[in-house]
Length: 236
Figure 1: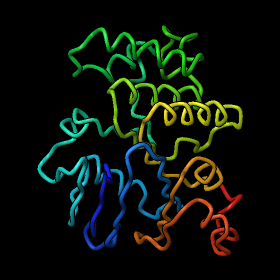
Figure 2: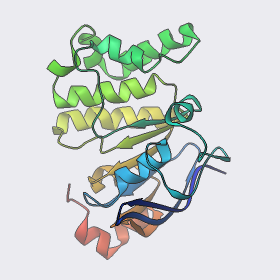
Figure 3: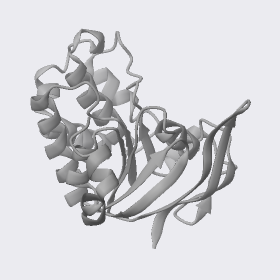
Figure 4: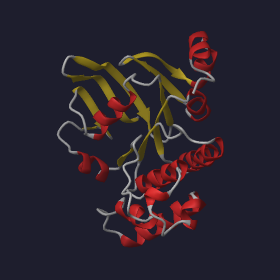
């Protein structure tokens, strides 16, 4: 049974039709990849799911329609969005940023356990607990953004371009973190221009171009598709 469903979702910004009837179904426990070029509508789609953007159509999480829910209620329900912009508090320390991800959680013992889980997942953050976010490298900030999202205790984690602009060594750290999180049962919706990275992780994928799903299927079907291979594989 799908944990997250989009049914004929449209988003318009004035005269611009950014999403044109997008339909997806993400199963519990899987990594689902959405690939496509810059400007294809990936971020718009995630913003709609997270409650940041008005849309037409239906978005359901765990069988519940999200239309009447605001962003914080959606997070509290377990659907958590790690944005491309990271949205860190620049003058807060690593530790303080992580705690901000858990500010609405009441079980403080669980929060302490998740803090240690994040520090184990990303040892660089453990080494820099007291460092201000703005002084960190782009890769370290990306780790911190993912860590803060994890502090909200997600059941579904939406990642928007987590490898954008990062050095290969940092991408490998994020690669290992995503694999471990999924092995532990976390459902991940991965939006990526880096199709090679997405294909490495995702069991199923969709190709989004100019607001329209042009192709969907298994990772092996994508790898065997001539258009995907020529236009996207190896192009980051």
